[in-house]
Amino acid sequence: MTMCKDRTAVVVGGETGIGRATAEALAIAGAKVTIAGIFDDKGEEAVQAIRERGGEATFIHLDVRDSNRVKQVVQQGDSGGHDILVYSAGVFDNLAACTDTSEELWDQLMDINLKGCFLANKAALETMVPRGWGRIINIGSIASFNASADGFPYTVSKHGMIGLTKHIARRYAKYGITANCVCPGIIETDIVSNTKRIIGDQAPALQQDIMNGEGWKKWVPVGRQGRVDEVADLVVYLAGGNTGYITGQAHVIDGGWLTA
Image 1 (tube, one colour):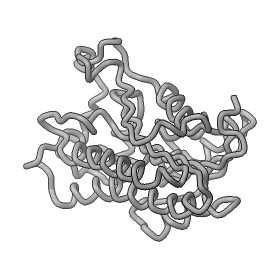
Image 2 (tube, helix red, strand yellow):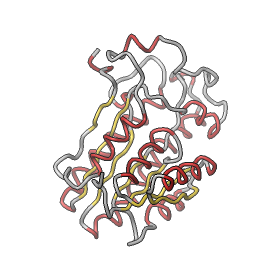
Image 3 (cartoon, one colour):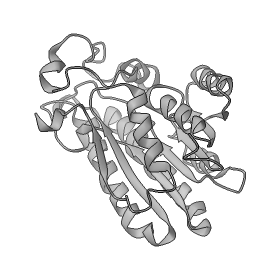
Image 4 (cartoon, one colour):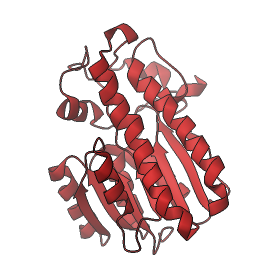
């Protein structure tokens, strides 16, 4: 597949989960990929996996809470920036209700899930606009659309991501830039353990892995969790050259959850 041949891509949060699958899929599709993230060990593993499959990839350490570093990483490319930005960095609050949410937990979620997304998108736009082409894909969630009784700061951050993406799509379409969200449902990832590594035991139920058990099945008509490669394939499609008329959308991939 050469959908992204001769393009450069930066995947923020590309060392684990959906981000890693997306980085691998973009490389297979022909893009030269930069993986940027906080987990150095996982990042190097991802790069090695891509190279073993004949793709091009490098890893750069990035904490999205460092605004200067975000700009530096997103804007460094072979031609002063990247053609494709995927923002997949994110942490979970593990079912914290509003009254369970400390200011510290709120700030951590917003800094990583929403402010980091803003910083990366802004940095990408600054180099995409002069070139007259760009693809921005932000990884949201079905929490971008609805709200449970818990998961308060996570839900707010993902709702905000859609507003951010829609503004960019509308304002920068005239420059050949598209911006879309991909909003997964329950996907087999390690977001819970990654959250503990990044922000520690701040959330009230952080020891509970919500992916365990069978309770989620009643919400998913297809009867299974999604795979990271299924999400990655959608991202690669949106990153391609034939999708210039698809912008400002939130693409749900949830096994039918929101229809149930």
